[in-house]
Amino acid sequence: MGQKGFFTDTTLCIGCKACEVACKQWNQLPDDGFQLTGMSYDNTGHLGSSSWRHVAFVERPVPLPTQTVGLLDFSWLMASDVCKHCQRAGCLEACPTGAIIRTEFDTVYVQPDVCNGCGYCVAACPFGVVDRREDDGRAWKCTLCYDRLGEDMTPACAKHCPTASIQFGDVDELRERAQRRVEQLHEKGLEQAYLYGADAENQPGTGGLNAFFLLVDKPEVYNLPPDPVVPTMKGREAWVSAGWGALGMAVVALGAVLLGREVVRG
Image (cartoon, rainbow, N blue to C red; front, top):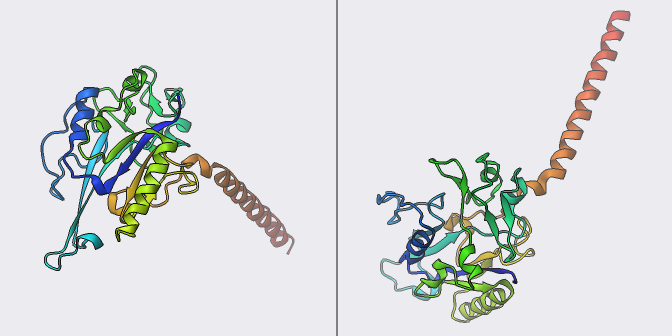
């Protein structure tokens, strides 16, 4: 079947939110209300159990090098965020029931009929993507339109993106396309352009993302972690630290006993 994923070129995003609407319609997700956050023109705010796509609106008082006009310089950074379908997925590794699986398309899928709502996957996701729904308590997130992939169809969000900001396909091909896009932008003077999470070398804490991004500012500006690490990668270090801690406590206890004996003899 091959490794399928998304390449999101944020420099092409116009913030139309067609991807959000298409995702909700296809997956029959409930609305999030129609209130602005008060922090931007965004009305959904973040990814959640009923928002599997979210377009971030970032208004900066800093112009892009290719857009400087000298008067009221500022720039909009817009990016359609989604589950990253990590090569090393913390949610999958933390799930105790086997509800979260890796599909034949190398995507990460939550089986709603197996999920028991324990929430371990929520804490294990370094991107804060997985969320539990209030009405049933189960975990939900982007499936990369698993049902559409089975019919050889493009995921709804990519299908309805009018600017090709969201591109779907074989991950290896997407990486090559993304690298060429970065080089094109550099030649045009936008030297800040770079790829976020394109592979394990780029992002060792997750082993690389099947849904990676082209950004033109720090990840934090887009509400993305600068150095995400799957919690289980720290497991060995945690056990070693716990062992040293236990050894230290034993030494202190033994010292206290020996010191007590010396005091009694004295």
